[in-house]
Length: 209
Image (cartoon, one colour):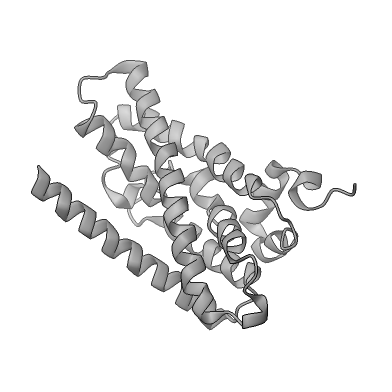
């Protein structure tokens, strides 16, 4: 059987190329049918930011401040160690932080893929509606490369998160074969809905506390 897409090229070369040539790189996997590779991509390379940010957190970097984080999932790390495991220290605290960020990637990926596929279903042509979930999965996961590789770097303007968001918009443009306007509408709607859900959960948590 002929191998195509990432099974032939490999995840690491694909990930590196996606950082500087996103349209061409994403296009190379348009026909790939794997649901596994996108999850391996985001959880595997996500360990870079998850682990390094856990080390920097121990050195005093505040990742509960969104401007320092390379993605929303990263905010779960400091929240967990501060609120759920406050007495854990040392290596156990580092591992707990790392695992929490990985869990955050998994939760937000699931939520984001559901939202992106739902939004795209209203914008995509009827004959192209097959495989919406897989297209959304690849767009969300593969587009987040900048956040996975560099999200641990503290910065004052959410730089790597914005970079990843732009790359995810490009991925939506490629995988759904959208116009640039439809891709922008999809991503903006996704971020707005996610923000509303985040605020609702934060409000309910505050009430419960």
